[in-house]
Image (cartoon, helix red, strand yellow):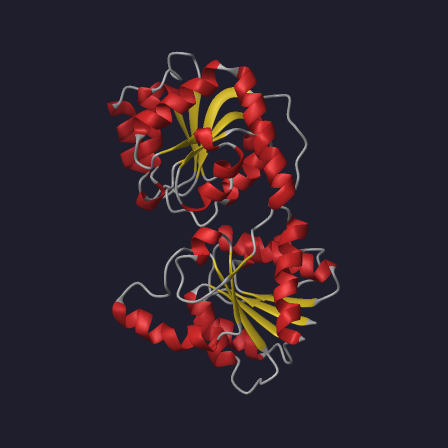
Length: 338
């Protein structure tokens, strides 16, 4: 089976990581796989040793050139609206090629009425769509097969440190300010704990200012962009995930794999992860006081941290594994090619 994944980007965030996981897993099962797009400096090392070919796709034009250079393709798998458009154009004349799109975010293609109308024919032409969660599937234009993302199982850590970790882009839609508000309302600073925030973005200055305005500047550490998130997750005592419309939340899944308890906003894909294993750790989106109260419970109770983390880890190993993800994607392909 010849599979080509396409994304029009120069970055390496959740979508690109998803592609690396699926591409490598399919190659390991014997498929011939090419990835088009994603930043060279991250994609090439991430795919090294997997047997997956990488071609550049920094923008739509370059991605289309790379796609046209791939020759015969059984399954063309695109990610995000621009790549869907590239796939729609590049598929012309390839009657045997099946076109699949993974929907990573909850919402229709395009940000306005005109864009949505323009993308509508592309959506109708697809042979299948995959959604990373039920939440995403419920908010896209047509029926989508839910295939949960998976993460690697992790050993349990015995070296926890007294800090709460938030790791995400520092952009308004991620609700990082809510984390600082909750921290200021919690007992964490008085107990000698730290809040560590990993990530960078447009809200960097605003969040620094907010921490000092709320009187917790000394107990909030801004780590910037980090490449050692797994190590931070293995050492953190608690993770907080405030984004209310997360498609699924790869950081939450990785926290679960490390048996790290997660306080999360009760919305989006969090309802299908934390909400299944530990619903008592969910708080109403936007309610900083409720989040603070959950943090206080975990800060004060080491046994609760252990039992909550263990429950989350059990669910991850049952539902959010890489093997299950690859099997689910491959089943979609097999159905289309049968």
